[in-house]
Amino acid sequence: MRLPESAHTSRPWRIHDIAPDFRVEDVWALPTPGGPDDFPRLVRQMTSGNDSSEFSVMYRALFAIRWKLGALLGWDRADGGIGARVPSLHDRLPADLRDAPPGPVVEGAPFRSVYRTDTEWAAEIANRTMHGVMHIGWVPDETGGYHGQMAVLVKPNGVFGKLYMAGILPFRHLLVYPALMRGIARRWQAQTGDSVAG
Picture 1: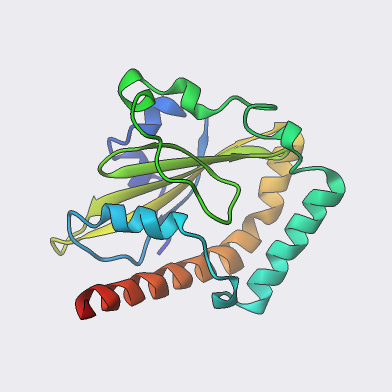
Picture 2 (picture 1 turned 90 degrees about the horizontal axis):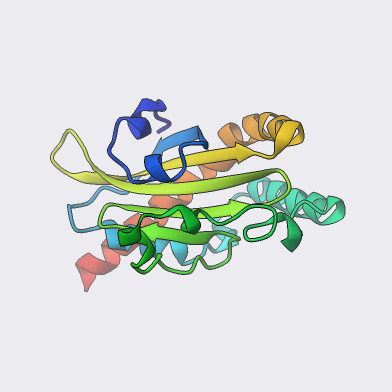
């Protein structure tokens, strides 16, 4: 379920002080019901890579087109990424986060972990269009349980970056995020079944 921006901004996340110049692009409640100690499991799921076959043909085709365009137009070259065009957000971390492990390696996606605490994890990505953050938090709900919450924070790269983000918005909301949420729910439920069976 898509949430208002305030669902992210009203919580005392560390990311607010680390990336105040990034705008909140999207906030989603993740279909990952659990208890207070299940956040590490969510982070493992989010970083372990996805089997592309679990997504629709349209979803896979959309990403194939995006990566092909990126290759043709040079959007995703190394000189446009973290440590080249933009410094890593890791450079902004306060001492307690900078000295702690940044979090797991993200498999199968061009994200880099920035930091992890007991209730939040942030990973960054950058290319010629933008510098972005995927922020995953673990929040209590009204039933006494917990679930994941994902916020996407973005700093577009100039006018072109703003036009790019506006251009892909309908695709994100109509195709990408709904498919992503279904995939997250399936994997979470499968893991829950495994843990119950084990």
